[in-house]
Length: 351
Image (cartoon, rainbow, N blue to C red; front, side, top):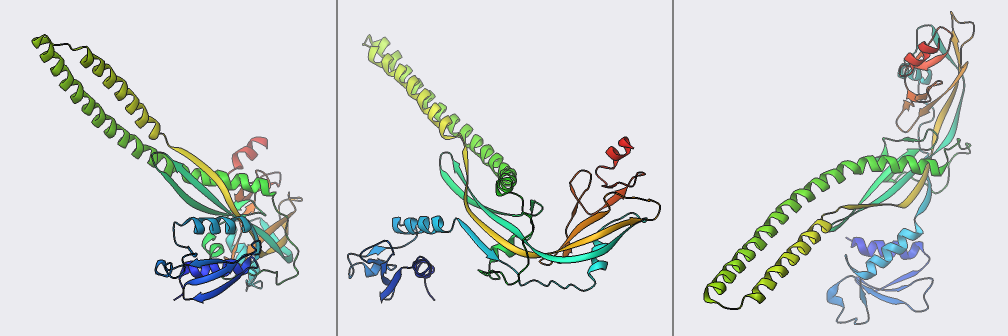
């Protein structure tokens, strides 16, 4: 089986237009596009005596860190298509009606079904925890840019086996929320996710700080007690004790410095950084409907656009015409205005 680092280097060099020539098993001459001479790379430490000029590429090596940084810089923004979805679902009208909750008097008549590509943006955020130690974690998150909603099929998007470099269909792209607005929504979602972890880490740090502080105070208390005993004996013998008094003051200053150092190390700082973006375009069915109601001469809005997601084979939550929140349930007031259950009370006040 090929070593994963070896496979990564071969694929990376090929992706950037370089050459990787195998000299012997796990030893390569690598020529990068921006280099004049090849670099010999070894994956096996035992090969270094025979190739003293070779650089060892292994986990934790500076060479691997450099290659990963270069690869990350090249792949900070990507574009892919996931369009091997089923766009002709059976009994679509019945399935859409079943997914939504509508008043008995209200009916939807499908007028047109049109597929469009919806842009999904995957954000990879790197979270760095800085305290007495440095730890890093990577948090992925995906947003549907048509609705600017977080998607629940993140694993499907992270898999990537169904991705293609070019679109299969000639469908137009659906409108997308601005990237900066999507970024703010993604960042806020990650902050909410990380907050619980931060609180847990802070609690553990404070508990550890309390234990370390008590141990240090006992340590210096023992030193002061020992020194006080020596001063007392010196006084009893009539010896000079000024140096011991100075030592006592030095102990107090040293204790204060050590305690302050412990407190500073226990302060947890968190850094959040966006490291990669991937835009994935996925077809979705846009369903234009006409709204009718028997007892209302007019109803507002008279048309609704629903969307059917072939990736999960479900109707998306529609946007409430009144409060713009996502909902699967619509109601109608006495003026014939459609609204969701959440904003029913405010609609009653207006009526």
